[in-house]
Length: 487
Ligand code: DSN
Image (cartoon, rainbow, N blue to C red; front, side, top):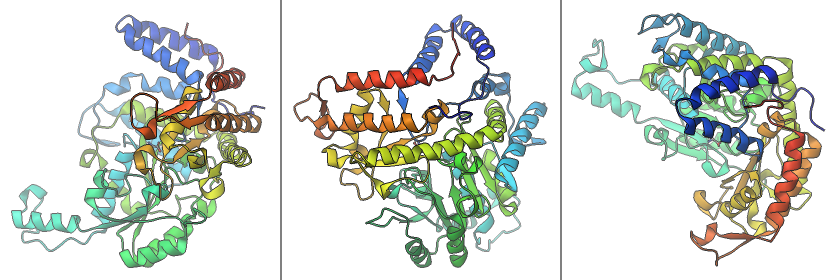
C-alpha cells in the first residue's frame, strides 16, 4: 500500500495549467526542447527509478527555477553584492539560508554552490583559509596576493600544496571529491583513505583512528555515495579532535534523512562536523545544487565561495532551494524520510531472502549495494539487463572489486525516488523479486556483437517483457505527479 503523506506535495489542476502554458511558450520557439521536456516526464513516469542519488522534485520547486531570477548577476553575499539591484536575489538567498539553518540546526548556511563538487570545493578552500599555518612572508604587508613577490607566492603555494586529507576509499563507497585523483581535490591534497572491514563491510572506527593518527590529516572527511550504513559522526569528531583535524562531512546522499530526523544524535552530522556539505537534489528532494553548513569559525571563508571557486550564484536555483527546504520543514517530509529508510530495509531484505549478497548484509540508510558476481555477471551487464527490463539502476564498484570502476561487480539501488511516488513495503518487496528474476535470467554472452566481453549479456526470452509489464502495473498504481496533464 502506498504510504500516506510520503508523496510529493502539489495541486494537480494548478500545476497542469502552469505546465501546459509553459510548454506552449517553449514550443513556439523551439519545439525540439518542448518535446524533450514532455519525453523526459514520460520516461520518468514509465520506469522503476532506483538510482540512489536521484529523486523527483515537486512542481513548486521545478517551476521556481523557470523564472527571471535566472537573469540576474549577484556575485557576493546577501546585502554585499558586486552588482546593483540584487534586492530580490538577497530575499531568496536569505530565505534559503533561514530555512537551511532552521531545518538542520546549523549556525551558518551558504546556499550558492551549484553542485556537490562545488560545495566541497568551497569547504576545502574555507578550511585551508582558516586552518593552515602560512609561512612568514618577505613582504607580509602586501594587501593582495598579486602584490606578493614571486618568492613569497611560491612559499604560499608550497604551504597550500602540502596539506593532507583523509576520506573513505572509493571502493568502500567514498566519493571522488574526497581527495581522489580524477577530481581537483586529489591534486590539492595529499590523500590517504580508510576502507571497511573485509569480512563485514562495515566501517571500523578503530582503524580510522589508527590511520588518522599515522597520517595526521588537516581534514578528516566522512560521507559516501555507496556505503549502505549510518556513520557515527560523534566518533568521527572525536577522532578528528584527537589528531587536530577538521571534520568535514559530505551528507549529499543522506541529507534527506538528516532533514527528516531519521538520522539524529550521533548520526546527525551537523552538530558534530566543523563543516557539512550537501547536494540538494538527492534524498533532500530539491533542485539540482549544493549547500555548505558550518560552524561560525568557517562562516566568513565559506561565504567567499564566489568568486573564490564558484561562478555567479544562480538566483533561480537558490529560490528553488528555499522552496524545497520549506517543504522539508513540513511534518510530511519526516514521514517521507522515514519511509525512504523503511523501504530500503524492505528492499534489502527482499533481495537477501532471494539469495542476493549485499555489501554489509543490509542497509541502514536509503541505499543498498548488490554484489552481482554470484549471478556470473559484471555490474555493467546487470545494469544493462535491468534497464532493458524497465528498472533503472547504476553499476558501482564493491569493496576490493576485481572488475574495476568501469565494469564493476556491483549495482547500487536506492529508495528516495520511488518512495516519492508512494511505493511502500509491498511494492519494494515486488521490486526485489523483479530484480532477482532479471538477474537470474541474464547470462554473460561473449557471442553478442559489439563492446567488451564484460559488457555483453543475454536475457532469457520473455523475461524483460514480463518484467516491464509487472513494473508498468506498479507504476500505474503509484503515478508520478498524479493528475498532472501536459495537454
Ligand atoms: N553522482 C552522485 C551519485 O550518483 O552518487 C554523486 O556524485
